[in-house]
Image (tube, protein in one colour):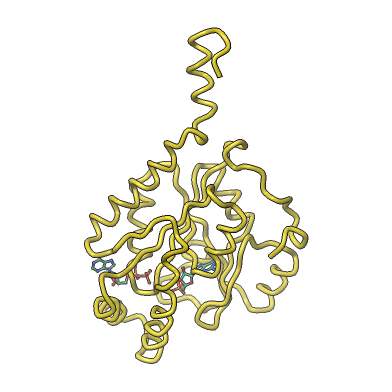
Length: 223
Ligand code: ADP
Ligand code: 5GP
């Protein structure tokens, strides 16, 4: 999407506007991304999830506005035309997208976590650069990925086969990401993701206001 067809101007630095970082997390389906993301969201303060819009039907237990906003293909298309998406992509035959509204609402309370596929990640990275640190989650092996997809028992065999085929393609994208986490042990993977978030928050450009206040207390014209 270009900046022409949405109502938001090309980005200035999020850091200078004291806006939250956009943490991108992508992974082949079944790697354990939702499990990891939910866990880290509970553990890290001032980190909010951006709820995406999708045309896929809800799975058992999914609630509108919590896991996703479930919309019709027609409504999704209208939202695309109105420029409401920061990024959007077709994944497994359904449309998925991140709206400016969700991102901005989440940024009001801190940093934002985007659980999006490799196509969406490329769009966000291109637009926001360093202010969208990206993480690729890898399963420990193809065999483990298959086990996890089957163990989740939310999809039939044909869907699982499709997800495995897509995974073969998607894992090649790992090199476009800033960080890679192997999701072998969940505790360890969560610790690494928390560390990445903390390190990004500690970058001096993210702390300009706080630093200025401290320097001011020293008197003189230290900048
Ligand atoms: P995704 O969101 O990537 O599609 P899920 O979070 O639904 O994947 O995880 C797929 C399955 O793998 C689930 O049954 C989940 O409980 C299991 N799982 C996730 N992470 C791990 C892990 N580190 N070790 C073992 N099983 C895991
Ligand atoms: P699922 O249907 O299993 O929840 O998600 C399928 C895939 O769509 C996952 O890889 C997930 O990261 C991706 N996805 C979810 N929301 C979005 C979004 O808003 N944009 C993009 N590009 N992908 C998304």
